[in-house]
Length: 230
Figure 1 (cartoon, helix red, strand yellow):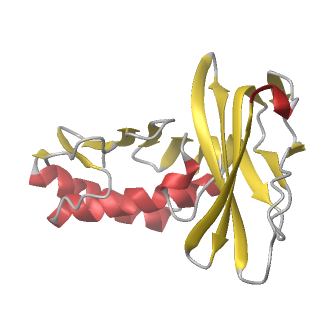
Figure 2 (tube, helix red, strand yellow):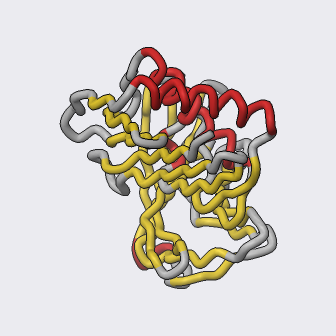
């Protein structure tokens, strides 16, 4: 059995990816997500932790052993692509996000990418973006048992109007017009509404999505993050 380390970092569009997952041999995990919209579905951001069930951890350990036996793999990384790094024992793989490492590394990488979504069901100190079903309101919601310090000083809110699969309009709010405090500590499932008066003319064929950029604190470290809904 071996410890597994996965991270995705960098990328062109700010805030840059900073996703880190560590799983120890018995299956205890810690996960940090910064850019929730880089997976499908989009997820909350922040810190998550828990324990994999025995069957899932056994499968993951088998995949990790096979990847370590295959040895280190370095795949050319396209310019501006986030970089994925996986370390198992004495072996590692490095590649661009969404690349296929093939064979044993490909199987392990695909599993870890799925866990970036699945493990956010175990929040420790996290933040989710919730969009009203009619697309006319949005709010931030605390998740987990630990409080979370939010930095709203550079908050940016965007709404996108879609006509079928085509983007039709964009609305942006940021800076002083938002009127929220620079810092806010949230806990206990606290929720607060965001300014979201985009004024879109909604019909049966239209839908709205939202994206929010801000920063949250992981201990003393300020981490830029981005959320998307739905």
